[in-house]
Length: 520
Image (cartoon, one colour):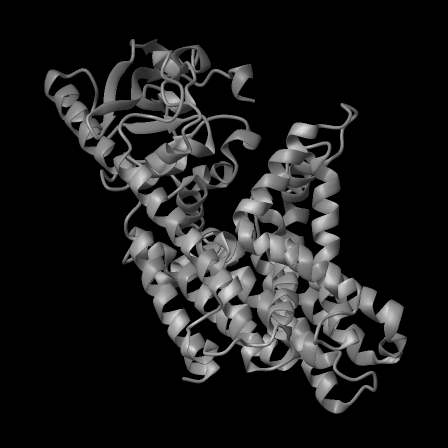
């Protein structure tokens, strides 16, 4: 079997595993929130550019098949395409064996196969553009002399980079890497009009996002800048260690070790890859990793933010493995033993994760306080929302029969999570409206979604649902805007026979238009 066929087999097997995983667990906080993007299409959203919403809208056939597997299928397809691109890039860097190794390594990373490859995130379509951009840049930097093919590829790169920026702004680091390479090693590109035309293509594609932010006081970038602005609090070692540990885990500890070894080998010119390509991959990888690492010394940084940056380092790692001559009988094996171990580790994480989420008795989080029961348990993000809908349906039927609440009253929430979960798993199946009531920095895109839904009118009633793992006192928060707020109905939720959390359901009567400073 040649390496092209082996890579295709790898993609098929990985896709099957991802599909099984995607259909086995409920949507996470971010995923269910991005599902709301797809319901209300815009040119930009509070948190991110629009591509993830467009992708979900496409893979669910205009939301007709709005189930977990279909919502996540865009991520699964993106991972398959990205894996094929990395095979092509590795083959272009060295040979088909290198491409095959790169495909294995990428598949063995938790970021590539799970974070961006199974869960639907902006990173999912971004990785296709990142991989396609790297593939083109490898061809563009193959020769120092500029020719017609390179110019054509550069225009195509501008197109792909622009689409990537519509997925996630981090894609701009591909442009940064290419420009750094040219400043240091091939300045003749700056004399070529096609370079500036390519940049204009990227900016033109990204312009709707810019215009949306102009119309909305640049709220997206103000929000993200507050997340990464370095404060005066001094160095935060805890944040740095959490970020570093997260990167190691998301990359796969086995793979991460060899990425470090390969990066050192690249600086020593000890890899079977041209100097120009080695430099390009380092320029496209290290700036994002370095910047995020520096910020993590002062602020909390999410480990998956640097995920795309490791793509180029994975290609260098594949070159490192390919220089180690095949042992006798290797051709009869599907992959090197160390990479087989890395894939085994990833499969173990997947199986353990699915079992933990669905069958772990009770909760991994707080068990001491009832109103904070389950706090800190990440598995509850993807468990129990569908079953809670049945409990809540029974409650509303009983309230209607006794006359406690009116028919079809709205449901309110104070934050984008758990609002998106309640929206998707509870209010939408029940054909009710969810209204997020809170500060824009708390409700995020719901500040815009609210305009698409019915508004509370004076005299309206509402339910407020709060899970104990994200507890707030709704009676205190919404006091003054409802005439009456009844004590909460507490619904116990169990997992495998043991309590995992509680849902607090407040009945709120007679809405009044009175500003509450805590909601501003």
